[in-house]
Image 1 (cartoon, rainbow, N blue to C red):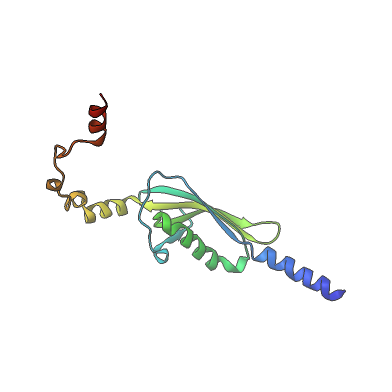
Image 2: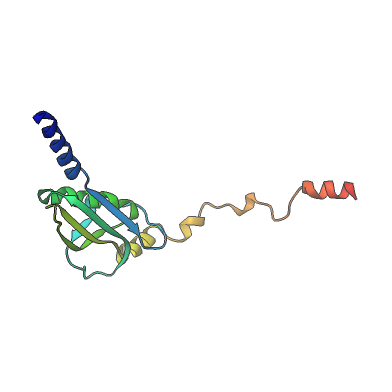
Length: 151
């Protein structure tokens, strides 16, 4: 009987400790290319560089000693959005003794300009060949043939 209670307590403990989550809500329009998670900064104050907000992030149920794991999971979740940094706005410990945090995923505006300069606008249409597409159709559309024969 003691063994069953012990196993029950172990299962409850594992459920409490194993349920750390990161929620990301996209708030920006458009999409950006994904960034390397290892290059995403975790900030506690608003940066001096100009930026755009990509998403709000919240994470809950982390043991207080696992802040590095929490930061890495925030990086992993924000990298597909194209974030350069995550600014943690508020954080604390809930009644269960587990750590929580909320913040904003951001992308620096000067990073946007550098990306545009590197790729260039004209590169999109560089290989587009207008000669392959005739201006006038060379054949009669099928619906015209059918309509003319029926009337």
